[in-house]
Image (cartoon, rainbow, N blue to C red):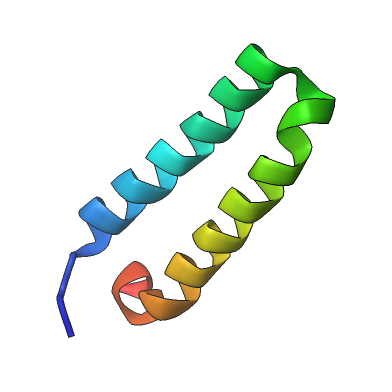
Length: 56
């Protein structure tokens, strides 16, 4: 398994959260909702997959 490290995992999560905010800014909350739900699922998957690294 690739070891990203806590800092890199958190950086990816911050990037994805920023992408969610940008979608709301560009598309509006209603139109961005479906995309943001998918992005949130990716964030949760990353957190679960790299759980051990995030705890360390």
